[in-house]
Every structure is written in C-alpha cells, then in structure tokens.
Image (tube, rainbow, N blue to C red; front, side, top):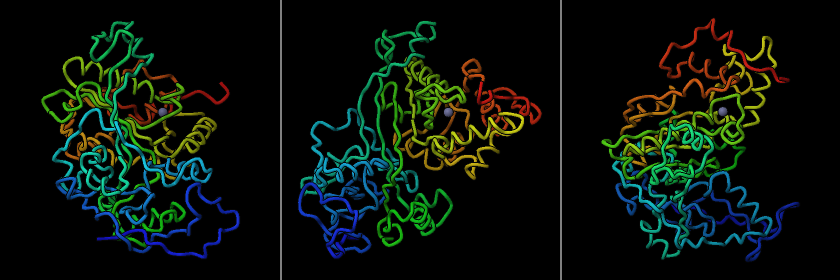
Length: 436
Ligand SMILES: [Zn+2]
C-alpha cells in the first residue's frame, strides 16, 4: 500500500519573498511528497467492481499523510485556493461541511464503471462519497466529491424565441411558459488514471508522466518520483452536464437520447461573437433536447472547458488576426493552416477522453447526435456507443462570418447531409476583414 506524503524537513527558514505564515497553525516546513511514508489512505484500485474495493480518491491537503493521488481537487481552481490561503482568507485546515450537498439524482452504478479501460478520466464514484466512503469519512479522512449533481431552470433567449415562433411548446413539465427549461445538471472534475490515459494516447505511462511533468514546468514532481501513485488530479477545466428529462433514462437504450458534446467557446457561447457557430449550435441542441424530452425521450448537453480547441483564448484570438490579415483575406481554404501556423497543431481537444462521461451516465446509444464533428463521432463510436442519426446545424443559424469555419470543417470531414465544399469553393468562402 503506498503511503504518500512524507514530510521532508527543510531549514524551516522562509525563503526571501515567500508567502506569509498560514492563517491557522504555526509556519510549517515545505513538504515534498517524493517519498512514501506515514499512514496513507488505501491505495486506489482503479476500475474495481465496487466503491469499497476501489477506495476513495484522497486529494485534499488537510492531512497530507492521507493523500493517495498526485495533484489536488478543483482542477484549475486549486490555484485560487492556494491564493486564498496565501491571502489568509482561507484556513488551509478547513474541511468542507457536506451536510445537504448530496446529489439530487443518483447516477449509476453502471457496468462500464468497472469495465477495464472504459473510464480513465473521471471518478465514477465522485458524487457518492457520502454513501460510499462514510466509514473513511467518519475515521477522519478528508474525502471530497469530484462530482456534484443539482437541479436548475435554464432560460435562454433562443428558446423563448422558439416558443414565440411556434417551434417549441411549453408543457409545464420539461419547458415552462416562461421559457425556462427544467434540467438536472452535474459538474464533473477531472480525475485521471495515468495508465489508462497513456493507453488512450498511445504512449507509455512513463512517457506521459514525464511530459506532464516537464510541460507544466515541473509542477508535480510526484509524476516522475511516485510511480506507485496512479491517479492524478490535473489542474485543468472540468465539464458540466445538462440533462433534460429523467437522468436514469440515459442508460436505457429504448428511450430516445438526443445529445450534444460541446467544447467551450466563450466568445460565441456567452458574448455572441459571430465568427463561429458555437452558440447557435449549442442553443439548437438545447432546442432539440427539449423536443426530445417532450417526446418521452431524454436530452443531454455535455459542456467541456476546452476553450478554443483547448488552445486557449489568447491563441484563438491570435489566429483570428492571422486569418483576417493574411493575403487574400479570411478564406476557408486557409482556415486550418492559420491555426497550425500559430499553435503548431490544428486542434488540441483530443476527443479520446470525451466518451468517459457518457460511460459514467451509462449511455450505450445516442439516437440523435447533435454534432457535425467527425472527431467526436469517431471517439463516441470507437468507445462502443452506437450513434443513430446525426443532426447538423440548420443553415439559417450559421452567421455569415462563420461560413469560413463551417465550410473548412465540412471539407475536412465534418458531417454534412449535402455535398462537402470543393477545394475551389473553399477559396471563395470569405469572412469579414478586421476593420469592417
Ligand atoms: Zn466558437
């Protein structure tokens, strides 16, 4: 059994410019976790058939001897938690009071939770720690949920417009007369099983650990010093699910499932930028999900925080400028080339891990996939999930300036019910200039 987090004493003197002593308790030595030791939580047996055999994921820092993973909770927000401690706003010893935080809806367990290699990037038991690990919690282990499930009403202007135009009809059950749609939503933080993630990316675990260590500037030394710790809580964005209808129906192949897996595009999704189709496609998917749920089916939108094809928004905006300033203007035939010039790749979303969330929900068949992405379709079907109909974005929802992206993607293999544009046509699809 690995016992993480042994204290390695340092001189005890703060480094020049170091953070002030913590709010609670005396100033402590810096603890490196490159050696096993102490009474750790039980080792994680990833993919074990029950929660008890799998063991809890202990990534909290309140008792370092209990930790059995690399990294810590809350993904990228772990850095803000560190800032809160540095600013003395947060007691580093604070343990969450989880009273009344249990999920509103139970998900699973499903057979895929323990099928080898089916789920490698989230903890399927992450919402149920209160019931699965009650004994360990009572014994003093600071186990934190990595998944939370709640209820909400979502109100979107496009849905209100769809009601006004008669495309949607409020039924008081799925859709209210006010335009509010009733959803169950879940937030899921990444929990990576490193051997499984390496397999998905076709590299060795050693290689994956080394690259993760080096490319984060050496942020997590345990990646290379603690091969016994197989689980990593990476400092990246999480994903959110919006479920229309009964969540339990997601696992029932006889119930029609309408689904979209959407990757974040803040500029369009929130601010309505017209250079791409992200928000129009997302709201179209929500409309389809509502209609599906009203037909007695269930709808699902998965929202991944992978801004700008996981290149980040700075890179994305640089690409926009490069596209619009290039000789001949922003044309569809140069769309991917400009991204590759700036980023080195066309896309960093790598859909290999995406289907995990579908396995968590027990999805085995998507009757209507609201996506034209061949990469998402391939990842879903290669994961053993059947896809029925593919639903494209209606032409009248594509903003004029987004035609460049859409034509380039269709020519590159995106699903289209019609003809994909030819190489000649791509040269003529042109977007706005920067000044207009
Ligand atoms: Zn977009």
